[in-house]
Length: 362
Ligand code: SAH
Ligand code: SF4
Image (cartoon, rainbow, N blue to C red; front, top):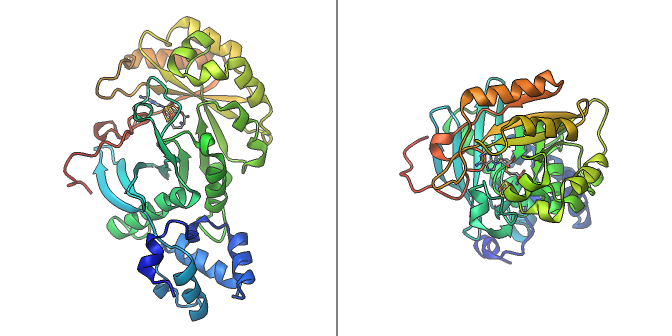
């Protein structure tokens, strides 16, 4: 019999956290175990954050022994936590092979939003993004995406308040989620299981830099909120910011977006990075108005978050408000994303694995 220690060192043992509920039921049935155990185990792991088989009082010993031998219930480890003065927490989470990613928890009035990573590093290389400067290391498996959520959920109940629950997930951490389509899709399906984490489709947002072939496959993805990192209204400016635009320009991007099946009254969110004296003028507003359909779009302005040696600057506050007001006057739904966690490099685009400060903040 494989020992638990041996099993946890083997990387090809399937993770318990890579199964949807239907898959786990089917797996147990095909191994002559009670398929109802799958529902019980989902409750223990995704509702109570109890991952050790010894804790599962209503699961049979036979099933537990099987899991001990053949499945991996390892959860990534929280190795560092930083607390911003606005309440945002940045976590460094270590995977089994030692690679680390960042996950962020952002509290607001009625939500606790988790910003989750989908890859170690990112291959897209946008010129304004700190993560982009790291290059690409590897995709995360679906269990490692789920693992960040489970590790942080457990950390919150152990360290802050046992009633705290993450209410929303945004794929806006490290990585381009659509570059890791299958694993992100599987993780999303698992997040939505009603007997598990039970996050509804409106509670999950996928942000993409514009990978056209994968956008064209979104009909096969759970119908979550979609955000497109647009950042420019013409190809010259977008080419400078996002090398992906040279492969899939705005015309191709919008042809693909037009095919996304949207339920009635749903809108696509367009993220627009506001950079001082670069894309924050009247001509940019006109360009956006030409490009975006008022009834199907929502614009989310993201004032540029500066980081060490960043070549761009953030516009002044009155310029940001002026830009928003012009778009609202033109008839758009337009909001400004409040940047959270700047002081600990936890805001959008500031994630690059930096966590050298002493870990004294909880
Ligand atoms: N890779 C995906 C999701 C992660 S980035 C994407 O690009 O959409 C999440 C958001 O942060 C994106 O809209 C991205 O363009 C934005 N972002 C990146 N660097 C930033 C910076 N320095 N300041 C503000 N937003 C930034
Ligand atoms: Fe990657 Fe998104 Fe950063 Fe671009 S903005 S480098 S796609 S993480």
